[in-house]
Length: 254
Ligand SMILES: Nc1ncnc2c1ncn2[C@@H]1O[C@H](COP(=O)(O)OP(=O)(O)OP(=O)(O)O)[C@@H](O)[C@H]1O
Ligand SMILES: [Mg+2]
Image 1 (tube, rainbow, N blue to C red):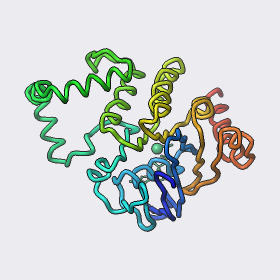
Image 2: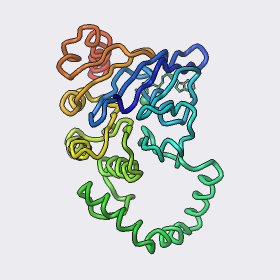
Image 3: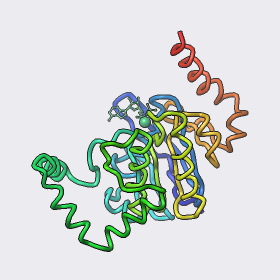
């Protein structure tokens, strides 16, 4: 049985068919790469699965149970977590709580909140354990290089103890050299059997090197899926996806 399965999942934004009758499934224990050109519908699909968006139609099954209309909170509790392409707000909190936190931070009061967490021995021990699993010492987040920030982002999502973790572009904006350590840690956590992971990724070197299986989206639909070898050999994929990538490369170089 699949860990997660969507059936004919659909979300339109006006005339844009962002996710169009998508049957998407994730098997227990795999590291799946979700790829596709800009605007293909990848983030929207993950938003639907994590509960940030409601689908127009279709269903989402997690461990066989229908979670299509479940709240974000309940999905996290059930074991679905995610990191974000752009980290700006705490999505598990409502708007008022987000603004309150900002005011708290502005007035330098977050220390009080954190001293509460730190004095809770179980919480700080668990947090230290997560950092240890990520091979990280405790440093001030503000001074971190981009690669380390991205890793912290993954660690935060991982700390929710998900069964299924979605990572939206975990290596974007990171130098090629910094990508390997991020992917190595994600891979080792998946291989240890602790989580199943879906990464949205534009870097084809990363995708082909690290994923067990690849799902290719194009204009809101699934264009192809298969092993890295199968996808590499798929002409439809290379012309639609790798073709546009190559063009982008040529443009960038021109
Ligand atoms: N909230 C929204 N309102 C209107 N249109 C949206 C919204 N979110 C996404 N879209 C549109 O839906 C389509 C799919 O967008 P989505 O962000 O899911 O693509 P993506 O595959 O994640 O792209 P990228 O690789 O650039 O992150 C795009 O045409 C986008 O402009
Ligand atoms: Mg996206």
